[in-house]
Image 1: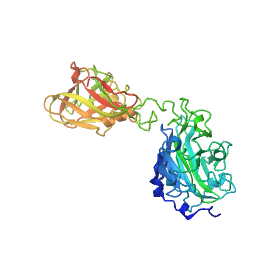
Image 2: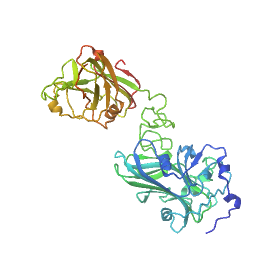
Image 3: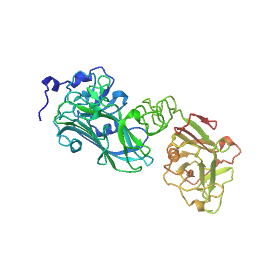
Image 4: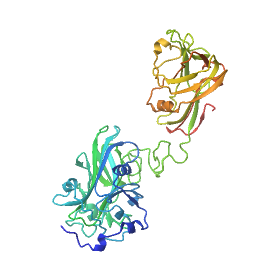
Length: 485
């Protein structure tokens, strides 16, 4: 079928002229599938995307900011030009013909029609076990309105989850130009809709049930011209997230939906799957936009909390010396720790309890401090990660059984006489706090034939006992100093 009554001028609308118009909506054309997928994602980590692909014209898709009707930021898929969605509405016939075929997913939604100029974004993802489905918000607009509503030119917008179409109009049918969103009173006209499109839907919230913990799910978002390639249509999509509750299904105006029960509709809630995230909420240091203002961790909430763990100052510390040549001997109550290869060999263990650090915190720095009180010969002391649980009152070389990682975490050089040594251990302490490594403390050894001793946690001089000074952000920490350092 030929194009409908289009002048040469309407087919040659300049993207540069449109882009130069004054508008709030900003569009950045791209066919980079990862960029499009990233733009669609909501906060909260309910959905983990594992693969993405895009099919369509490079000009037809893009990311956007300051979207229509306050639909924040997201991805735009069109049947023509992404830039053609920019206001002002200075033409009722905005058209870009990409000369591409339609798509079977569109064909299935409008039986009997031929579709054209398909744009399809496909995401493969896993769903967090704590959710009952997925949700997202969208706006569908078109230059088909109002002249071609109810005609044989029936542009379509569809969303498929694992092969099942999940986006519907008020009648439970696919969302098309001939449907009730455009033929009824719910259509939003330009300039109120903030786009070039003569008419758009309101913000629609689409929900679809899906098993929590499911993997390799496939979400396909598609828009197509239908009947011919004339007059652009486009879908703005954002906020892909998890849905909680028994009613994770259907597509309705967003003002009717409050999925997380926080009193804010999905129109205004930047994460409608998390009741602690909504406009006006308190901002925390957690890399999440808790108050929906478009900023993350603002207002100084990420000022670090700094802590010194040291027996007699703050927290719980254990330390001991073990003797490989005396496998049943325990020395955990002495005022000194020892290392060295003089007979008998000596190894030191030091552990700091970090259970006080709140879940979700991130370590920004960590320093292990130990006070050297005696040296026989200068040497390099190697610090390893201990790999097995132990207590200072019972640990021996026999029951510890060389349970340490041979990789050297850090080291320091001894000096003549006495000295305080401070060693950077940020990486391993960060792993302990994150739970990616078990915290069984440090194992100290040296290769040379020497002997060294250090103040232990039993030494009467508290300030010279072993310590761990760490700073962390997040996890609800409000900033401050604990332990006097």
